[in-house]
Length: 303
Ligand code: CP
Ligand code: NVA
Image 1: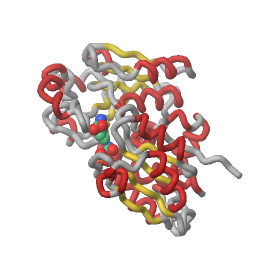
Image 2: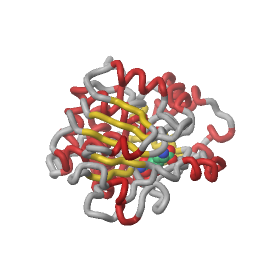
Image 3: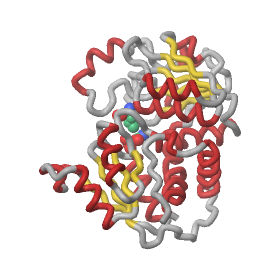
Image 4: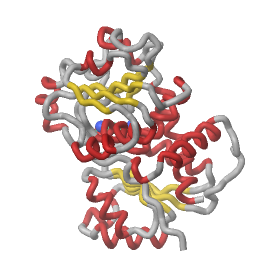
């Protein structure tokens, strides 16, 4: 019997597997095997405790294209919302489904679910990681820059789930990363420590956005207020004022630097309209690439 593979963080795959997935995503995007349905007859659960546009729709469409069906579950509408345990839910869903993608608050919920599930569990976003996002980000960077190793990515803003997964992406690919975060909003120390211990990427956390962006090939940001942090909104908005990606900040990056944002964006806060809709922005290609990379991922985990 083969053991199931989970994808809770980017570190659940090897650097070689990551390269293979990104290559497969490029092939799928070009239409290779468009009529093959490697996941025919499979059922993929989407257990989402939080809102989603890109992750949900790209998975629903992508799984249909591969021959699988998806079943969307809002935890409030299944018995989990009435107190059925994660343990029991994971055991039961494993009897019906072939894989489950979970979007949740606590990363521990995801780990607990995965420890009881007999099927692959994919992280569709937790408060600590957003590894499916990082896959789409890497595909977009390769499309625009034709490589990852040796590039410099500057992340400006909150040291959140997206930032943590980008740090792991850098450590697995040899891409250098500088993050500019206000005091108290740095990335997860455990993620940083492990990333710094592994292969040759430079990883730096600084305060000054200009310093982070200098010589960057890719400039990345995310919302200041993540899902579930609404009660901290006014405090965070003040702290993050200087962390906006605008034309002035972008002028410190390389002339051919591209701009990424995982979306949804709060236009006028972490990014200006001018930058988001400008010639350097690759944000809609990036959103599209969620589709191709997640197809490659689920095929890898299940086919
Ligand atoms: N980037 C991302 O995960 O978007 P959604 O929240 O819309 O899924
Ligand atoms: N950091 C954001 C990402 C949304 C895709 C959040 O967690 O809400």
